[in-house]
Length: 240
Image (cartoon, rainbow, N blue to C red; front, top):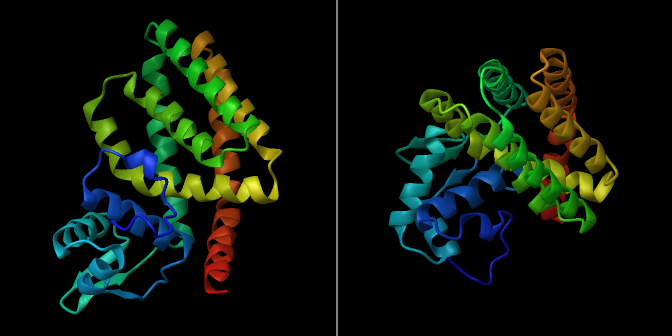
């Protein structure tokens, strides 16, 4: 992949990944951001030339995105489907279902080590706020929730999470970047929500768990319009 090209997706997140996976991450976030518009036909040859790679990793990337329903593979090329507002809401519905299930398993476990691990991640989120690093904050945010989900050792729940994660990760990253530009004080509120998660897990108090889930997902669902606005804003900026 070209080193001189400007990328939206953080390269350090995928340093050890194959070229096809790295291309999928970049194309995904460009589509979700609106930089690549719905209805655009993606040509293997043009993408190979743009990213200075062979057609093989381009093919791999397009297959990945097709499984996520972000693009549709056709004989003439890959057609961008993108994400609708309803798609975004449904992704977070899935996340809410997963985390609700996970919490019910957590109350039956020894959570001492989990609380320690989550506290460390929370500290890293706080450091990211200090340095106005939206990318690092996003990375730690996703890691926080994934750590909770992995703690119950449920292979099929993890499979569902892993399927939803790539799109969700891009949505979170774009949202946090927008917040850094427009309402950076909102990071402290997001961090406080995560501290409530830790309190809920540590105390195994279902009332606090319900409060943590309610605050987190009420906030997330309320941000759908903001996410959609950020996509349109980024698309307009790219056109200028």
